[in-house]
Length: 116
Ligand SMILES: [Zn+2]
Image (cartoon, rainbow, N blue to C red; front, side, top):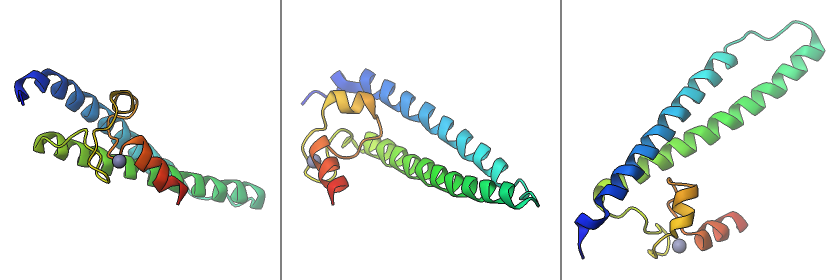
């Protein structure tokens, strides 16, 4: 195996992961700022805002899960195991990694997990 060959690609992947991470961290900050807004006294407004809280919580959970996946991908990049599926060990397709650089599973395993 010639590891040097894949180094420029690794640098690009790391760069795009870090960029995505920064965007997500910014998004979580914005979500927190909105979540701090006091509820309006008007009941219909309150209901709408409580609905927003649920959406905000879902968005935050999603962003945090993605952040965790990015951190895991960065660690795997450093360890040299990036691009291998964490479930079956097969290489994840290049198209999938391009679309979602933080992917930890191949498409087959991700679909199986979602179907559970
Ligand atoms: Zn797999």
